[in-house]
Image 1 (cartoon, helix red, strand yellow):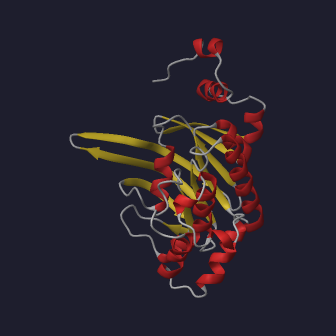
Image 2: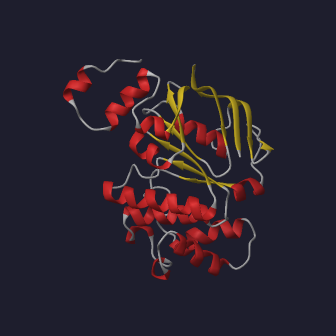
Length: 260
């Protein structure tokens, strides 16, 4: 479903050139949930931005559902029917002056699809929000409800692939669990392919089949969820991330290495 070979992404900041992603390669099969994990600045979100067209200064070979992507080319309409993205911040990703109905109807109008009303109702039901939420504004919703609306917006065009950029990190712990369980149910019911970005190994291992660990723009290791659950990653960096994900431990932190 997704084939990434030797992906490199750079950003120019005046005289400085930042090499954000370095020779990343991975293949993700249809129906799989694939995780990208790493500390802040490791390049994991940049990989998603290159896939969905928000970062265009990249090189390498990328294809999605058999369609080769170009770095500077505008994505086709069919691409957005195949791939949708859920962003990290539910407070910033929804227009504050638009109702939920307008937010969900906009992709339908852009794609020229019919029957917007039934499509909106169906998407709200899929994410566990009823008709009563349809004409509310984002400020009338909790953080978890806003993220459910963002997921509904991603589902409205019935895509095959969801790119999930830290979809629960801005939510309370109890709400995080609800949203993760929702995503797992939707993946099974709709046969979706996930690419999930997170800094939290616990979240990634809960929802993903395979995980690529990134550091300084590179993939340092690829592990399965089972290997992670058994505490058997091969790289010291991954083992250190695993220890950090379990909570504060003064003795463990004193033994941490600085990987630069």
